[in-house]
Length: 284
Ligand code: PAF
Image 1 (tube, rainbow, N blue to C red):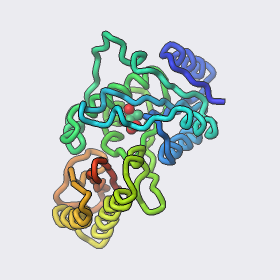
Image 2: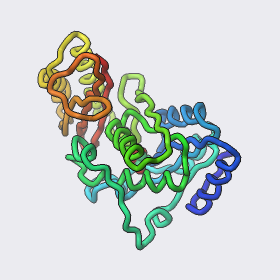
Image 3: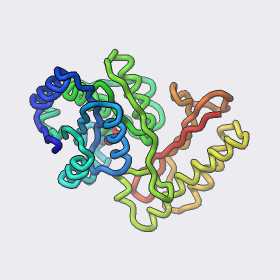
């Protein structure tokens, strides 16, 4: 039985109790509407810790006013069943007023790395993410936390924050889980209609082409990006926000790829009215 906790005080009490009994606490923060991607994080936590806590909180401050906070899919009963069948120890499911009471005024920002790529298109997003992740870490007191490679920039930012703020927390970044045809799992895939769902494959196809080009010796970023654009622009419903290649750990943008290094090829793209992101990691 997974216990459901909605108050911060109760969460503090449970975490302290688990720690007193020498349990290593694994934590998977989510916004709910769980899919196989989340389940893979939960399974990793079950393998690497003694007690797994999963939070479900659709964080209002990481959405801009014109974004999809109100329509973001929510189904707590479905999520709870999934978490129970995975044998999660506790589900932290606080209300918005529990997290952000009226006089709330403290925010956490990771500077440089939050300002590029996603940060250019969603300027307040990462400040919202790092603030809520800090709050959740303070509530759950995890020893190890699990994030998906799907949000590679988010994971790199959290890693930076953990290091900068000297948090005694290990971070594990787990590989992307894909549908059979290659589309990266995302709670937002539910917004796609049948045609858009087919069109959305251009993201993965463009990443596969990039990987193929790199593996066959292409080192020039512009040429790789141009080939990817051709694939994505072949469907009318698409509109590219960015395609970029960054070094894996620093997220520095590279025009020429160097031997011995690993890079994320990243894409953010609209399919109709749905914004999708995806990436692959390549080592040269
Ligand atoms: O990746 C997400 O689902 C969210 O950004 C997170 C980390 C749960 C913070 O709200």
